[in-house]
Length: 382
Image 1 (tube, helix red, strand yellow):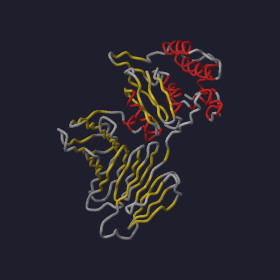
Image 2 (cartoon, rainbow, N blue to C red):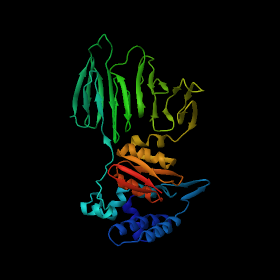
Image 3 (tube, rainbow, N blue to C red):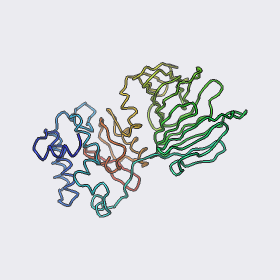
Image 4 (cartoon, helix red, strand yellow):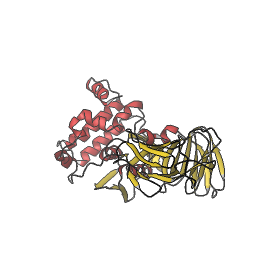
């Protein structure tokens, strides 16, 4: 349901209790910002009153406390979580706030922190670096047997030419995204790779010697092309190898995450880790391998949740606050610190990745999580 439809239902008195609560929660927030000042106590009491009117929004799980990023009311929840739409229909000018408005919301007049986008650096075999977000479309470089181009929709494409690869073997290239960046690269064999923020992929400009092998740090989604010969495709991380022929899968190998997770969407993959007690296992679609220390296990997962980042969303299921904030930090290129003893909560729900950081923090703050922003540093407080 669009925000406009929800507001029309509210105006005509046709909202459910939960829908009414969503509208009034946003209204209270904007009323405070517009100068009809509510005291902190009044705002907190009002928010609690609205929150408590929502059905099935919170489940006590001792000693854990779980709050959902959406009340269990179906599609209506997207209105709150799509922040920018709700902001637009309450006050269109808030999508592009003036300095005066920023000062009113935040006395320190912090600059708006925008979401990430297509940003990456390509490093060629000779050490030359090309900043892809600043490069023009079209041909970027040529290497033995390969032409490298950038498309208008922000993809890096390797195209094999008719000339033979040099005898010394194919050149090695690397594409790296910064925090706040993402990029798609189409490898010479036709394999498509989407890199998430703060990730890198090292790969040859041509696959030879009977194997297609790349090295990954961070997170990437692969759609591996099937080739005529039985040439396996291998993804190497620091502690594991994923081997496939032709399939779709996601690898999350961030060093600041507690585990390396490989999720299969289509086909079959073999996950191998020499340091694990179980050295290898085969995944089926919908399964995820979790490598934590020397333990390699398999779990059933929601595929859409795993690749939500590729589709422009944050999506969480029973995620703790630190997990949520790690994703936020990578996408908005910010540092996150924690102050005091934080409440133990789990979050479920989704937020679009195309909204400003302040809107994401606004959404999270509705669930009694407090933030202090100083430049590009976020401090989470009790």
